[in-house]
Amino acid sequence: MVALLALGGLPASAADSSPKFNQEQSHSAADQHVAVSPWTGLGRNALANFSFPKALFHLSAVAGTLLIIESGLDTRVHNFFARNTFFDKSSHPGVSQGAVFPAVLGCGVLFSGLIGRSSQLISAGSSVLQASLLAVCYSSALKALTGRPGPEPLIYPNNKASETFRFGFLRGGIYHGWPSGHLLANTAAVTSLFYFYGDKTWLKIAGGTYLGYLFLSVISHGKSSMHWFSDTVAGGLMGFAIGSSVGRDFRRRWEGKKDDRSGLSFHVVPQVFGISVYVGL
Image (cartoon, rainbow, N blue to C red; front, side, top):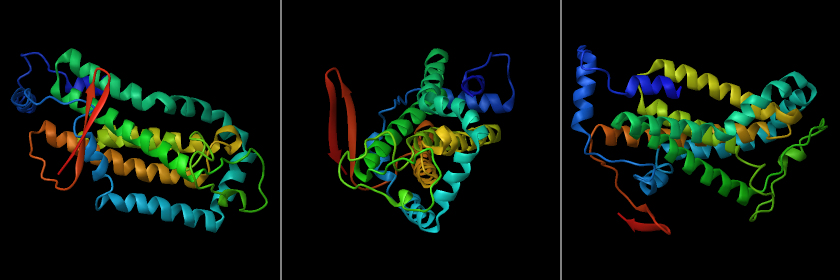
């Protein structure tokens, strides 16, 4: 995926005189003065994830979790995958790859842009890294506060285990729990590219296929002992909200459009020893 984006985003030779290329080349030359990084607009994008209509995805994640638990679907899905070891064995590559894919994807696209001096790839890579960072922080905070235990690799006779939440702080750690960090971070990373490269159908197909495989891997891994079904659904919905917001913002910046969003925001600026945070309107 990184290689294909690099081929599509790096400048070609001067001999390529197709109208489409000339349009993209002139656009790229026009916005070279716009410097972005994974920190660009971090605070405003973080808060924008909870504005309308993005807030509906977060609310749907909560409502969906409750409905899945009450319907007993969590338990039925878990028991199915706990009995079928084929899915467990096929899940290992997906789970391992999902732990590092957002960072690898973002760094790969960003460094390809830096090497090729492509402002488009730099913006796209920064978008992926920022979306991934927000997703990891968000999922870790929610896991720390909800304390939902992960399922055990056994057959449950009822829904009691899936109904357990230990609200507080770090009562269940930040590895297992609600929502799925794998789905949240990977969905945010891939969706940010969907919205940055809105016209690339192949990217939507490749990204959607990957997320589908990851979803299946997470709910079946370790005889379905990694996450409940509702954890993965919530992670996917929240990740989409984050990725779409960040991807759209970086695309707007790359196109040189003005930010017309209003409201409270905070700005994060990396320093040699730590970071500085500024709050404003």
